[in-house]
Length: 255
Image 1 (spheres, rainbow, N blue to C red):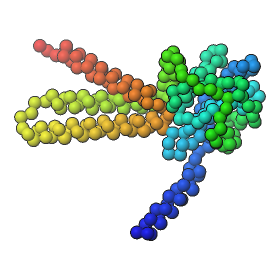
Image 2: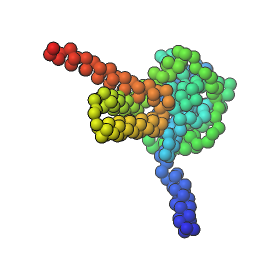
Image 3: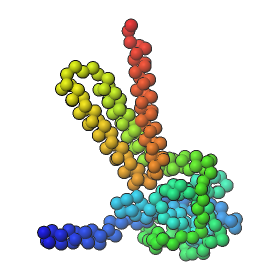
Image 4: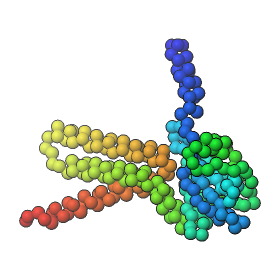
């Protein structure tokens, strides 16, 4: 027994020691021009780290016109930038349900940030690491900003949204199957028993699909609200389509 415990301990230590080897390099996912308080045109960038087996952490950084670091936010799991024609940007922290407003009084002139090319990603480790943050203040969004935030996250996470909609459609079809089985007339206990087993299997499959959807949404940086919206959207569209198809068949059926 002691040998088993020792082996498990060695495996755990080896796994923890190997974690840095599995980590991918930091990377930028969104880069937007932003008008700085001094009138210069700077940049806002979303800098992503490596969550190893979870969602990649992300933070926003602001650069001046020369590419020097001015502000660095805290790390979170889901963030997006929404910028208008006048280069005024809203920075959404979807994980906390907040907006980050730049505060020029707390800006710090920093080093030049590496560019966007792949070979420069090795120089982003120090910038991505650590918990120190400055240059921003968090606040609650207004109702209009919440609507804009939902539109922004849904458009920026479109592959995950489509995946969830497909899962929602499949769950809706499974629900239709349950209704069909439930509505069938049965006269024998064996038939009722088999129908109950079929319904339980279908419900279990639906629950499994929902768990898969939630897992990949978490990895993709989609928060709970947009996840439920995209999941229900696919289900509602499928359910409405089935009802329309059923009504059309009823109207064309011979009397």
